[in-house]
Image (cartoon, rainbow, N blue to C red; front, side, top):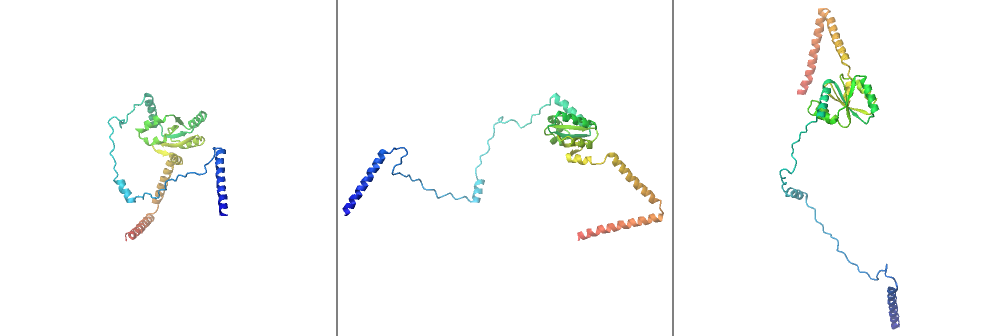
Length: 269
C-alpha cells in the first residue's frame, strides 16, 4: 500500500514538473516573473553614531582654531579711498545762487511733497497761494542737497526725498498755507523753516495756533498797564494802610520760608 502511495506521489510530482515546463515554453516572456528570485541583502543599518562634543570643548576648539592672516592686496588693486570732488556745472552754480537768495529773502520756507498732482491742480494751487503773498519755487533735490550741505540749514536735507517743491513767503503766513494745502490732498507738508527755525509738520500746525505779534503786544501792554494802575491806586491810600499791607506781606513771606524749611529739615533727618 505504501508503495502505491509513493508511486502516486512521484507521478504527481512528475506531472507538476511537466506542467511547469510547458508553461515556461508556451507563455510569453514579457511581464513574466521567474518562479525563484534571488534577493540581494543590503548592508545593515549603522547603529553607532558619533557622540556630540561637549560645549566647553566646542568653545575651546573654536578659540584655538587656526585663522590664517588676511592676504595683503597689492597696491593699485582697489580704488583709492579718497573722495573725488566733482566740480559743479555752471547751471548748478546759478541754481544754487538763486536758492541762497530764496533762503535770505523769505522768512517762511515750507517743503511740500508733490504726490502726482496734475498741471491743472498745480496752477489752481499757485493761484490760491498767490492771493496770500505765497509763491511756489521748483528746485531739483540734487541742487538743494548740494546747497544745504555747506549751509546752516543742513538739517533740512532729509526732507528732500522724492518730488518736492518749496512754498515760500516773505512773512510767515502759516494759517493761510495750511488752509490752502488742506484743499489740495495731493500736496503733503513735510516741514518748514520759519524765521530760521526748523519745524516739523506738527510743529508748523502748533505754530499756526499761536497769536499774532500784534495781539501778543496788546496783551503785554494791557498787563503792564493794569499793574501800574493798581500800584498807583495803592499808593494813593493812607500811609497806615500801606504799612499794614507791607507787614502782612512780610508775615506771608516768613511763613512761606518756614513752611519750605520744614520739609527740607525732615528730608535731611
